[in-house]
Image (tube, rainbow, N blue to C red; front, side, top):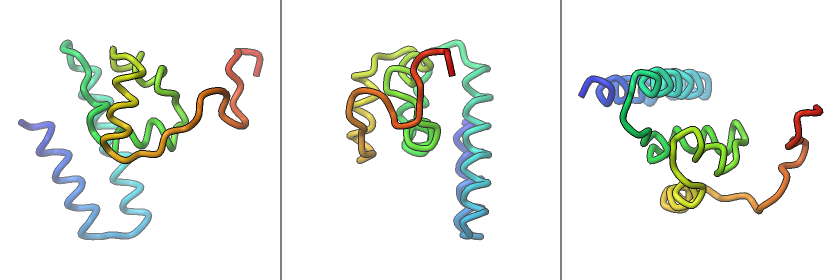
Length: 105
C-alpha cells in the first residue's frame, strides 16, 4: 500500500531528525499527503481514524466534531469515539473562545 509506506517514510525521517521544526514539517507533509489521498478516493473517508490527522484537525485547526464528521461522511458521535480512543481531550459543547459560528466575522 503506497499511501501507508509514504506516511511511514515521512514519520521515520521526522523521528530521526527529531527537532520541533522537523516534526512540524513532517506533520504538515503527512496532512497534505492525506488530503491529496482523500481527494483521490471514492470510498468513504477513514482518515478520522488516524490519530495524528484527527488531532491536527480537532486541536490545531479547532474544527468541531460535526465539522470533521461532515468532511469524512460520518457522525459527530463517530468522531467523538475516535477522539476518546486516541486519548485526545475533547472540548465542551458550545462556542470556541474567539471563534464566531456565524458568517458575520
